[in-house]
Amino acid sequence: MKNYWDDETEALITEYNTDTPNKEEIALKLQKQNPLVLKYLLTTLDSIIGNHQVYLVTFENKNLNDMFKIGYTKHKDIKNRFGEKRWGEKLTIKKILKQDELPALGAIEFEKYIIGKYPPNATFDGSNPGKNEFYESSQLDSVLELWNKNLNHYKNIVGIKAPN
Image (cartoon, rainbow, N blue to C red; front, side, top):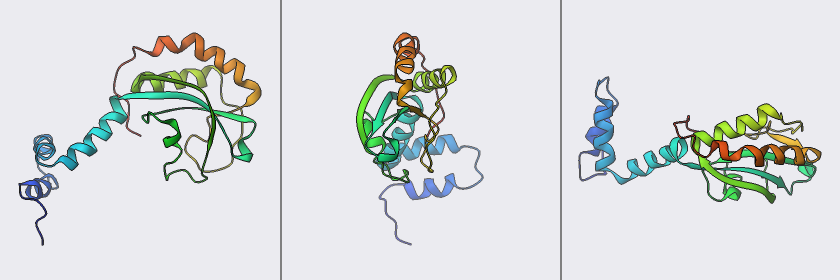
């Protein structure tokens, strides 16, 4: 087998995959030894504790013409969110109606609050993530009112959320 590293990365990976009780210690050594490990850990940290964008958007897709969607993402550029390969149908943002930055936990709690007070009422057929977060456009004023009155309550909700 070819050794790809000039350090102890391979040995640490092998040790990590045993029944060792010190996985945390090995993980810390790995992230110091190999920049790729650190890069992936930082991506996960962004997902669980980094700032997120909460948004309301409309789409150019014909079957979504009379709808808007609520959501949150760690991407600074919301359009990148819908460029991910996990989307079954390619969704193209027409307009960003609202976009605000909140801590990760604040973003998820804010979205839950809006959806809890004003449940999405549009039907979207498909397997896309977030397919149950669509509203009929006639509901926009009500959702915007909730958004504007409550956003500031979530700006200081700092904590850890599950990674997406």
